[in-house]
Length: 366
Ligand SMILES: [Zn+2]
Ligand SMILES: [Zn+2]
Image (cartoon, rainbow, N blue to C red; front, top):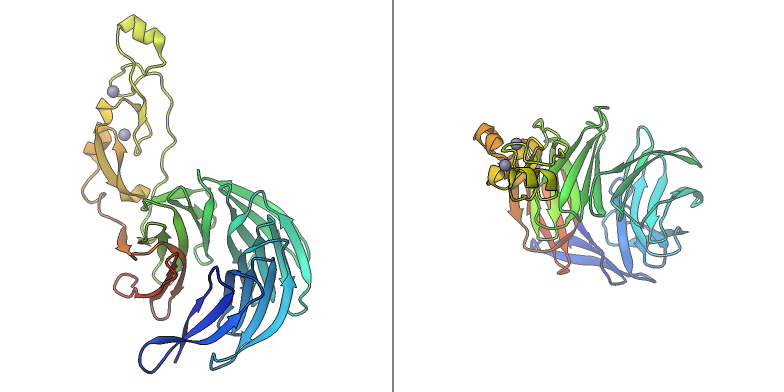
């Protein structure tokens, strides 16, 4: 028997699901909490389970070796209101958390003491930590990612990233390549190349709805992103992608020279009707609709779906360049949480339908 699923919900209960000899999963524990559960973090090595509650408390338990018992260890009065994210860092004995009170806090899991805090600009919805350099990444609902350097009892603001037009919904850190992925309600994932030190940010467009959860398969360098539409996209991060170009500004089409509608002077001089401005996603040029009538996917720029391109770029893109760099799967539920088990290649998704699904990802993540 093996523990495979820990369920949380709008309910006050925490359940540990064990695979029985029949092959079916049944809860071994049914723990009732004093307030609704909002997030959790489980460390398999120590079997430590940290549960964030709606009342701002983090409740810590140790699971017994056979996963049939949950022993309360301590409570942290971490936040003024709902705990939104928890991360337990075994190496430092730290519990990192964010709350609806716009606070990031970290506590010592040995003493239970609060070590420090930082006020974020909005409610945090993504939290990742680099153990080696002690940098914490906090994504929030304003779309910003804040990077802090943590000391034992203080922190300093390193920088902030802003690239999304919607709130950040999930963060995922790859400590080997030193790359941060951020998912957003604007449907996109951005890959921030921190290790490359060139400020490269690559956009990945493969969802038709909010990106809700991210997971990374380090051994195969594949990113798994899950959306509100139930889509699971497995991205090959071994390919070299290019940044999308800045959109150029022009008063007339940069292909046929026809004036755009605000360019009254040229419209008058040449007796032409002003056109609407569009942008080619490949070269960034400002073009009219007629000069950008075709669509193409540009997977090497992160566009797995067809986007507007100018006629000359459409001609220049080869079939090879159009080959998808991601695979698409339908989970058939609105995913709110994922967990990827790299050793087995299993993906757990839980949805707003209160269903937990286990996926064998070995055919695509290998
Ligand atoms: Zn034109
Ligand atoms: Zn173009």
